[in-house]
Image 1: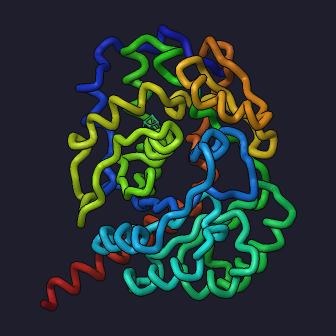
Image 2: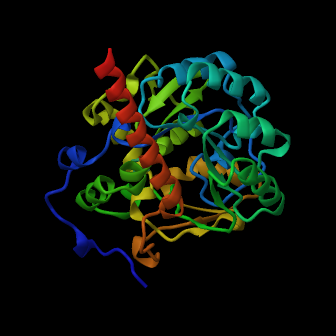
Length: 330
Ligand code: SF4
């Protein structure tokens, strides 16, 4: 069993040395827009902390328009995500707005576990799909249908997967230098995405999707205002978000976690406030007090996203070439 030990520490690490190794949103192939916290599943260690939030929210259509408009020039995929976006009360209207604001279909992404009655609309609106049923039978029927309608273009994953815990705060488990060393290599920062989310009615941008989830779940507001081209900012401009969220997050430790359908969250003491909410709903939780007791993944925590990542990189390079040709011809 592979575990972390404090002898893995490189004493040179601090926020200052970790920062230049981290990626800003413009350096990655996807930016999420979280449109709702409604979801038909309750996966273990959900990246959105849906079980730890109070009540439901849906992004307003006006906010959705501003969110995607701010990403017009972004040369990657804009992923509509939730919860399950197909459960947004005005999903049809969001699809219409998306098509109006972002003309390139391949840039319009849908991340969903079940599209219910919206298969035809989803196939017509989106050009990139991350379909993950998390092993759910109804989701499998729904997404298999969507997959066929899109000529098998999307990424379809129908099994169960291990979800690494995020509520296991690094600051509770590691010395400071080891914590920053791990953060500098965080798989979600290196391989995945920033996000725009509706936080207490206001649109907010985060360098990392998990950072946005922490902020919304706690009812705080450390997000950046969503202005045109906010995503072009260098990582140094997110230093206050990194200081606020990364030490309290467990993603960078790469603990093995639980299968998605076990509906079990691991946490450490700093995140007890969030866990209290889910425990009220009888959610299964496990308190972790030592890193060395936990097995580590021997692959990136985002590796089930491998094929969608490849597709996103292809789309991104195609869009880059197209935009170079366009500016050459002007
Ligand atoms: S908030 Fe968590 S997931 Fe996001 S970059 Fe920091 S350590 Fe990684």
